[in-house]
Length: 317
Image (cartoon, rainbow, N blue to C red; front, side, top):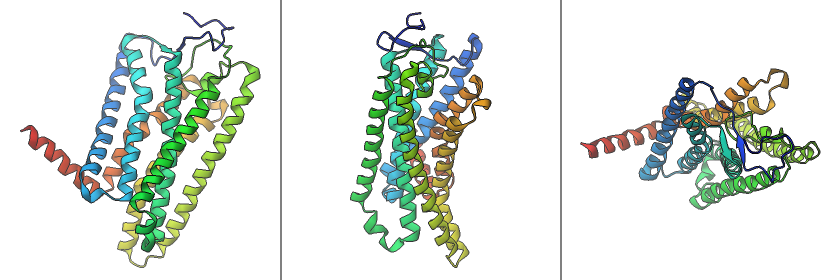
């Protein structure tokens, strides 16, 4: 295959080889079927939330506005990696073009970093709603919410541009076979020339500082939220306040824990099979389960979804 020689540079590469989930045709088709089911479930769940929030005027509040943006990001995020992997299994190939790989890296970092920024904004929204309820309408007005959402999307876009440009400017000297089912930056760096690895490592350290900063903000927000909730005298009031925060806290926990497990697990525990499973956990599971997490614990959203489904079924009759 072209580009597999050990001395090839990134300028001469025109494709990468992704890791296959299975070698036998039966298992490849099984992988395709499983991923197709997960993908369709994620598309349906997130699309229902987007439609329900957009169409139901009772859900035109800051919390649901941010949830709509989260669902849009989840739709894009899962669509970045899964369709190509499913196509490769269906057609029994491992190839992804150089430009396709660069596009995957860009959209992966754009959507995952924008989602992380949005989850940070949503923690701020919950903090204002519970700790400063009298100032909520002032601090979380429609214009302020739009500005925060735009800032999250723009931050993700800028970060993705810088990270993708930095990654694909590094010469590759170790062939073109990636040990992952999508174009993951750590796997691309394994193919880089040794002298250039430190440049990307510096960018990764910078990224880790930004991630830790957002994580610290979320943690401090919830420390103040829980402190305020415990001061509420009535048990019903405490339960309502916790119910407001539980879906967001669950989504943040799934998002952060899978990322940490993927990138901070000890190298002694690392193996190709484990890396593959972990990559599925953080790139596939959150977009698929986020709609379920929000709809299960939210009466307003469940009611809006019920009305939407009834409307669709009624029109079909």
